[in-house]
Amino acid sequence: MSRAVSPWRSAAADTFALVVYCFIVGMAIEILISGMSFSQSLSSRVVSIPVNILIAWPYGRYRDFFIATARRSPRGQFLLRNLADLLAYVSFQSPVYAAILWSVGADGQQILAAVTSNAVISMAMGVVYGYFLEYCRRLFRVVPSPQPSPTARGG
Image (cartoon, rainbow, N blue to C red; front, top):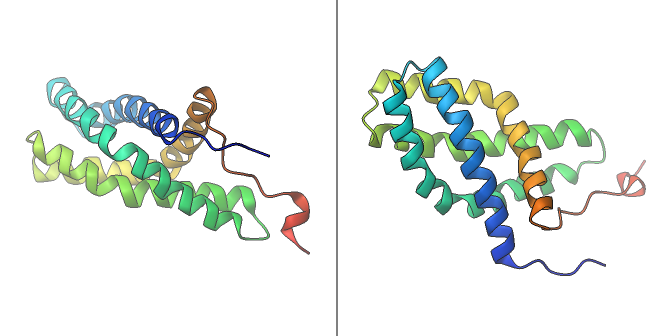
């Protein structure tokens, strides 16, 4: 039996994970791939902190929906979980990311390059973030969503 986790603890775990992960990965993409200056990227990352604070918990719930949907399948749990992480991350984060870049003065070409690169890199990044989020939830003692049992997979 698991007891209910405080929504505040869950929100804190999700917020911590998103702020840290997006700061580090976002800056690397913006400077190394998109050609933004360090100053532009730092501005983008600073703007992204309050945005990530606002969207972290809703994104965590959004992602949990994708993961729960993937778990309903009787086969391919690992592949489907990773695909669910990827789809949740790209579909939720890309519009937010474009708005942040626009707000700090990135031009259309830079925004397109950064968002497109982010989407492509999200083939791994969204999946890695999913594992990082689960790790942070364990650090905050937020019980992860129940895993399907081997007998629940059917035959």
